[in-house]
Length: 288
Image (cartoon, rainbow, N blue to C red):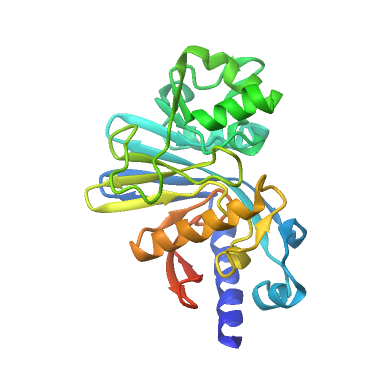
């Protein structure tokens, strides 16, 4: 156990060092796809958002010096398409600045994939009532769209989507257990990961034999929740369902050796997993 704590501390030190010398953009090659993890913000983390995490668990996995919480989005350059997965809060135009620095103007974004309709995932969609990505089609699950725009209205989400009314495409994501999963775009398969929100969706990216799973808000405090997936966060609408989904998705990624990228995993935001504790817990390490 002491070894595990030491590895966690070393991991955080490496991440802090790398981020400090970086622009907050991490590039990752996925076959012929170019994937860029974009950091919108980074701040001190707060274990108070964890539900049911006892002091012993926190002492085991959280370094004494604390940890960082990050908010990320992902840009995928795939053939002639520029695909944005979530858009951040929109604060300071940081995500927009970063995609421009990568040679992509907002009007060049063809597709925006939304994992769910919490404000830190759709905030860059509109500015002053106008579409920031005027030529983009917006994809999100039908269940998520229904919940936050009709059943339990999130006015921020309604406002963000309003400029794209004719460009919104809703879908039914495949079940994780489905033998045949349905792609919505070449190399992109949405997978249901309900619990955090009623329609929370993760995206499996594939090109050639390379795969990457973008897990959205499957977890918020990686240092704890990879090791103890049963611990949820206060942001999870259905904490029990979120915990079940987290366990299932992480087990799937570990078994199939699929790296995962998350909106709240610190730089580089993409990690590989290895199951332990009879498959109930997961060690992780950042990709190079």
